[in-house]
Length: 181
Image (cartoon, rainbow, N blue to C red; front, side, top):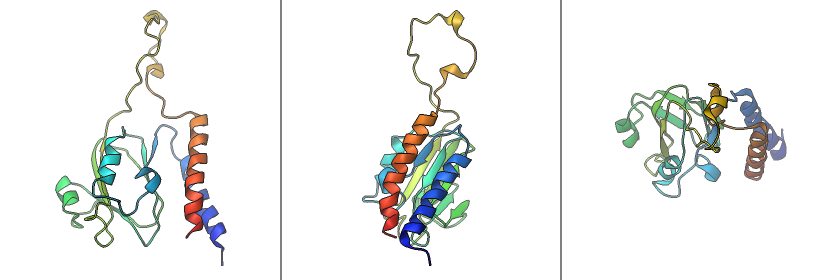
Protein backbone atom coordinates (compact mmCIF):
# COMPACT_ATOMS: atom_id res chain seq x y z
CA UNK A 1 0.00 0.00 0.00
CA UNK A 2 1.32 3.44 -0.94
CA UNK A 3 2.31 5.83 1.80
CA UNK A 4 0.68 9.22 2.21
CA UNK A 5 3.75 10.91 0.81
CA UNK A 6 3.67 8.75 -2.32
CA UNK A 7 -0.06 9.41 -2.76
CA UNK A 8 0.46 13.16 -2.31
CA UNK A 9 3.32 13.15 -4.81
CA UNK A 10 1.25 11.24 -7.38
CA UNK A 11 -1.70 13.60 -6.98
CA UNK A 12 0.52 16.66 -7.27
CA UNK A 13 2.22 15.16 -10.33
CA UNK A 14 -1.16 14.56 -11.97
CA UNK A 15 -2.17 18.18 -11.41
CA UNK A 16 1.12 19.47 -12.79
CA UNK A 17 0.98 17.12 -15.79
CA UNK A 18 -2.51 18.30 -16.62
CA UNK A 19 -1.24 21.88 -16.58
CA UNK A 20 1.47 21.05 -19.09
CA UNK A 21 -0.83 18.93 -21.24
CA UNK A 22 -3.35 21.74 -21.65
CA UNK A 23 -3.27 24.56 -24.12
CA UNK A 24 -0.87 27.41 -23.45
CA UNK A 25 -3.53 29.82 -24.71
CA UNK A 26 -5.57 29.95 -21.52
CA UNK A 27 -5.21 31.08 -17.94
CA UNK A 28 -5.69 28.65 -15.06
CA UNK A 29 -8.08 29.82 -12.33
CA UNK A 30 -8.03 27.89 -9.04
CA UNK A 31 -11.61 28.03 -7.83
CA UNK A 32 -11.63 29.49 -4.34
CA UNK A 33 -7.93 30.41 -4.55
CA UNK A 34 -6.12 29.12 -1.44
CA UNK A 35 -9.22 27.39 -0.02
CA UNK A 36 -9.86 25.29 -3.11
CA UNK A 37 -13.26 23.64 -3.61
CA UNK A 38 -14.64 22.87 -0.16
CA UNK A 39 -17.24 24.10 2.29
CA UNK A 40 -17.24 27.86 2.02
CA UNK A 41 -16.55 29.98 5.11
CA UNK A 42 -19.65 32.02 4.20
CA UNK A 43 -22.40 31.90 1.58
CA UNK A 44 -20.84 34.58 -0.64
CA UNK A 45 -17.24 33.30 -0.61
CA UNK A 46 -17.20 31.84 -4.14
CA UNK A 47 -19.31 34.67 -5.60
CA UNK A 48 -16.85 37.17 -4.12
CA UNK A 49 -13.95 35.18 -5.60
CA UNK A 50 -15.55 35.03 -9.08
CA UNK A 51 -16.29 38.76 -9.08
CA UNK A 52 -12.55 39.51 -9.00
CA UNK A 53 -11.69 37.37 -12.05
CA UNK A 54 -11.63 38.01 -15.80
CA UNK A 55 -12.41 34.59 -17.23
CA UNK A 56 -12.35 34.02 -20.99
CA UNK A 57 -12.85 31.29 -23.57
CA UNK A 58 -9.76 29.07 -23.52
CA UNK A 59 -9.18 29.54 -19.78
CA UNK A 60 -9.33 26.57 -17.43
CA UNK A 61 -11.05 26.24 -14.07
CA UNK A 62 -9.18 24.14 -11.51
CA UNK A 63 -11.34 22.62 -8.80
CA UNK A 64 -9.06 21.24 -6.09
CA UNK A 65 -11.03 18.82 -3.90
CA UNK A 66 -10.98 15.35 -2.39
CA UNK A 67 -12.90 12.67 -4.22
CA UNK A 68 -15.78 11.22 -2.21
CA UNK A 69 -16.01 14.31 0.00
CA UNK A 70 -16.92 16.90 -2.66
CA UNK A 71 -17.98 16.89 -6.29
CA UNK A 72 -18.88 19.36 -9.03
CA UNK A 73 -22.27 19.63 -10.68
CA UNK A 74 -22.89 21.93 -13.63
CA UNK A 75 -26.41 23.16 -14.40
CA UNK A 76 -27.56 25.16 -17.43
CA UNK A 77 -29.62 27.93 -15.77
CA UNK A 78 -29.35 30.45 -12.94
CA UNK A 79 -32.70 29.22 -11.57
CA UNK A 80 -31.37 25.67 -11.13
CA UNK A 81 -28.14 27.08 -9.69
CA UNK A 82 -29.94 29.32 -7.19
CA UNK A 83 -32.13 26.40 -6.09
CA UNK A 84 -29.15 23.98 -5.91
CA UNK A 85 -31.29 21.69 -8.05
CA UNK A 86 -29.97 18.36 -9.29
CA UNK A 87 -32.62 18.33 -12.04
CA UNK A 88 -31.35 18.67 -15.60
CA UNK A 89 -27.63 18.69 -14.76
CA UNK A 90 -25.25 19.35 -17.67
CA UNK A 91 -22.12 17.69 -16.24
CA UNK A 92 -20.92 16.03 -13.07
CA UNK A 93 -17.34 15.43 -11.92
CA UNK A 94 -16.55 13.28 -8.90
CA UNK A 95 -12.81 12.59 -9.02
CA UNK A 96 -10.76 15.54 -7.85
CA UNK A 97 -8.86 17.50 -8.74
CA UNK A 98 -10.79 18.51 -11.87
CA UNK A 99 -9.75 20.90 -14.63
CA UNK A 100 -12.51 22.24 -16.89
CA UNK A 101 -11.57 24.02 -20.11
CA UNK A 102 -13.97 26.81 -21.04
CA UNK A 103 -14.75 26.54 -24.75
CA UNK A 104 -17.87 28.71 -25.05
CA UNK A 105 -18.69 32.25 -23.87
CA UNK A 106 -21.57 32.88 -21.48
CA UNK A 107 -22.59 32.02 -17.94
CA UNK A 108 -21.54 28.75 -16.32
CA UNK A 109 -23.02 27.47 -13.06
CA UNK A 110 -21.25 25.00 -10.76
CA UNK A 111 -22.04 23.69 -7.30
CA UNK A 112 -21.22 20.83 -4.98
CA UNK A 113 -23.96 18.20 -5.07
CA UNK A 114 -22.94 16.48 -1.83
CA UNK A 115 -25.36 16.86 1.08
CA UNK A 116 -26.27 20.50 1.76
CA UNK A 117 -22.90 21.88 0.59
CA UNK A 118 -24.52 23.98 -2.15
CA UNK A 119 -27.11 25.44 0.20
CA UNK A 120 -24.26 26.40 2.54
CA UNK A 121 -22.46 28.33 -0.22
CA UNK A 122 -20.26 25.82 -2.09
CA UNK A 123 -21.30 27.11 -5.51
CA UNK A 124 -19.87 29.47 -8.10
CA UNK A 125 -21.31 31.25 -11.13
CA UNK A 126 -18.78 32.19 -13.80
CA UNK A 127 -19.32 34.54 -16.74
CA UNK A 128 -17.02 33.49 -19.58
CA UNK A 129 -16.12 36.34 -21.93
CA UNK A 130 -15.27 35.88 -25.59
CA UNK A 131 -11.65 36.96 -25.24
CA UNK A 132 -9.13 38.01 -22.63
CA UNK A 133 -9.02 41.69 -21.75
CA UNK A 134 -6.21 43.60 -23.43
CA UNK A 135 -3.55 45.49 -21.58
CA UNK A 136 -3.37 49.26 -22.05
CA UNK A 137 -0.69 50.43 -24.48
CA UNK A 138 2.40 50.98 -22.36
CA UNK A 139 4.08 53.22 -24.95
CA UNK A 140 1.59 55.92 -25.82
CA UNK A 141 4.17 57.74 -27.99
CA UNK A 142 4.87 54.71 -30.20
CA UNK A 143 4.57 55.34 -33.93
CA UNK A 144 1.51 53.52 -35.28
CA UNK A 145 3.28 52.98 -38.62
CA UNK A 146 5.79 50.70 -36.88
CA UNK A 147 3.08 48.50 -35.38
CA UNK A 148 2.01 45.44 -37.30
CA UNK A 149 -1.41 43.86 -37.29
CA UNK A 150 -0.26 40.82 -35.34
CA UNK A 151 -1.52 39.88 -31.93
CA UNK A 152 1.10 42.07 -30.19
CA UNK A 153 -1.50 44.36 -28.59
CA UNK A 154 -3.37 41.63 -26.75
CA UNK A 155 -2.46 40.38 -23.32
CA UNK A 156 -0.52 37.16 -23.25
CA UNK A 157 -1.97 34.84 -20.62
CA UNK A 158 1.33 33.66 -19.20
CA UNK A 159 5.00 33.36 -19.99
CA UNK A 160 7.06 30.28 -19.26
CA UNK A 161 8.48 32.02 -16.19
CA UNK A 162 4.95 32.85 -14.97
CA UNK A 163 3.95 29.22 -15.40
CA UNK A 164 6.96 27.98 -13.43
CA UNK A 165 6.25 30.45 -10.63
CA UNK A 166 2.61 29.38 -10.66
CA UNK A 167 3.56 25.70 -10.49
CA UNK A 168 5.99 26.30 -7.65
CA UNK A 169 3.30 28.17 -5.72
CA UNK A 170 0.75 25.45 -6.45
CA UNK A 171 3.17 22.79 -5.23
CA UNK A 172 3.91 24.77 -2.08
CA UNK A 173 0.18 25.14 -1.36
CA UNK A 174 -0.91 21.62 -2.22
CA UNK A 175 1.82 19.44 -0.81
CA UNK A 176 1.18 20.17 2.90
CA UNK A 177 -2.55 19.70 2.42
CA UNK A 178 -2.07 16.46 0.53
CA UNK A 179 0.18 15.04 3.22
CA UNK A 180 -2.77 15.26 5.61
CA UNK A 181 -4.86 12.90 3.45
